[in-house]
Image 1 (cartoon, protein in one colour):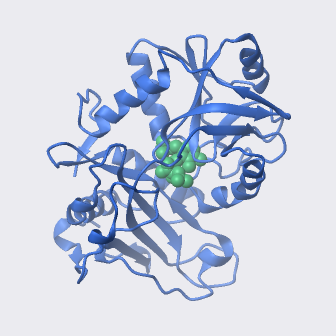
Image 2 (cartoon, rainbow, N blue to C red; image 1 turned 180 degrees about the vertical axis):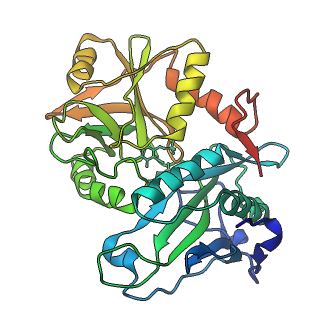
Length: 354
Ligand code: PLP
Ligand code: COI
């Protein structure tokens, strides 16, 4: 079934909340725009999307989302340039990943037009909500969950697709320190680590809370089998620079295939940096920290952009990262955000006009 902007109905909010927002002091994802897009799946197909005022949703207590966690989401951003034009970054890649997550979680796939036309219609309406303050953007959260009822442990027959938006500042404030995990696991072979599903995040909260109590911001996950290989962080993929080589682990069914990650690999290679996509052990990182060849570590993701890691902990010892004059994190952050905010050339065709 095809949909186009013409059949997305729009019910406008009576009063806008925009004047209540302090755009100079935005936290991450904590105030929401005036509208949201809603689309229901029932009787085997997706209904036409609707844009309605942002509001609570009513669900039956037996909705399967509450019991079996059938839910998936994406994280995207809209950026505003100096001419007030709005842009997205590789949105079709988010749709592709949403549908990969959908398949793994037995959720019906979403057709491309619903996603892209829905995003465009919503963002055109919410254009004034896209911040212009440096380092800020409109964080976009498309998600699908099981609204269908039943205590039977099987996939629901009804789903809701919603897109909500939040003008947002930085995901991390201040220096980021991470703990390399030795006990808990985020994902396992054959599991759902590669899917962007709610339970992957809920499962991280407890180990992350233990790390926060010890003074760290995030956990760096290691493989569930040996805890010897660096995998990813709670909300970002990880890059490690040893001497002048930028290393990131290969993706697998345990790791989220980050859009920022693959974009940075491409940009870094095109900049002539030496990039290695290969497994990296904790032992190698500790050795590099001890002999001075560990130059940088940073996380990469839509929310986190590029977040340099200032220090990491492992087996009770803390290791500080040096401050580099020719920082790859700084260089790559400039290059990717220049594309995202339409400040520079986009030779890849990643920028997408709203
Ligand atoms: N890894 C995890 C677990 C994430 O939640 C995210 C955020 O989406 C990423 C990596 C980075 O992915 P992306 O660059 O597509 O935002
Ligand atoms: C994103 O980077 O968009 C994410 O989805 C991470 C999220 C858990 C904040």
